[in-house]
Image 1 (cartoon, rainbow, N blue to C red):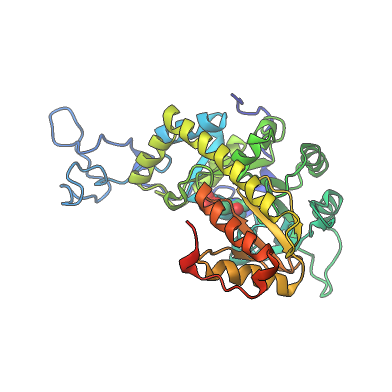
Image 2 (cartoon, rainbow, N blue to C red; image 1 turned 60 degrees about the vertical axis):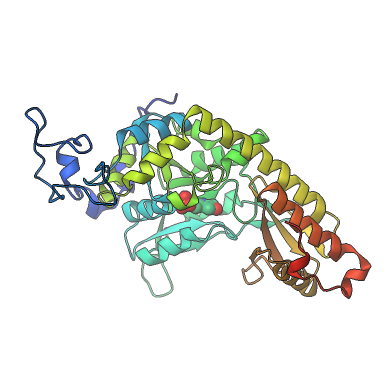
Length: 406
Ligand SMILES: *Cc1c(COP(=O)(O)O)cnc(C)c1O
């Protein structure tokens, strides 16, 4: 259990114009949640403070969704905090880590004045949320070392520190306020070495928030990678994002969390929409976090990592593939030998009814494709096609979807 840190969160990192913003005061923030279907008896209060319906929907006979939910349902917060080993005060639950990314930018960056720092090629939502908020994106590209990717820690430190020069038009440049790094990263699959993270946090100090997006951490943990959660107590400006969309197999439930300093967590809750988590999602999520469900998740995660390694084995040394990048996630990023090879791989898989992710148009990812390690039979289906493409005769063989093995 990681206790709330005693060091304060640097208040100057919160948007100055939000300093005394209290957020929306909802019916549920000003009064406790009634039991489902309650009201009207001698002992229960009669809840008439939120303009909810007095009776239940035909679609919801027991009235479980008649009333607004808690903004942060306590049982859900407790179960998630236990899953990630943090104090409840450090956790903000929202609609996927996508919402957490958006909340962080809105709470910390002043539109038109501030910047975020990203290390592309990486997950696209950091730049999308930043752009929608009117915040500059300062890119410090990953170093492409041929068969692996490295985060350029020195350049990131410089980007955060170097806010003193003046732009071409004489206006002060945007101040970097948040550094976003995913580990494992998507689509590169790379891990951020713990020593690099500690150096980054030490050097940046209170000048910016460092967000480590651990959407794929469960897969990395199978091979022993430690989570940045362990550093939360030491660094008030560290934020760790986790999600139920990947290893937990609940992408459509849209549940993700920000784990952070309790002071920043309080600000994020005020910035968040009033009732972010639908009650059925809370129920579903709670049942996904019981000990028995967690055991199933852990076993599926191990199986996915085995599948990823079978996928890697089929890609390694394949005549159409130049690089198979190491991956700590549930996917493999490859660079095809050339444009023609990339096209053959992508088209042959597509004709077999297998859809993979095309990164050929992304700067730095020429000829690159990303393949998810799905179920064991889905990995088999990809391996079959790769096997056919590796045979010299495959140049003249058309692979039809009817021949695909599932
Ligand atoms: C998939 C992914 C997410 C998305 O998370 P949601 O919780 O589904 O919003 C976040 N970060 C990275 C790096 C991802 O690849």
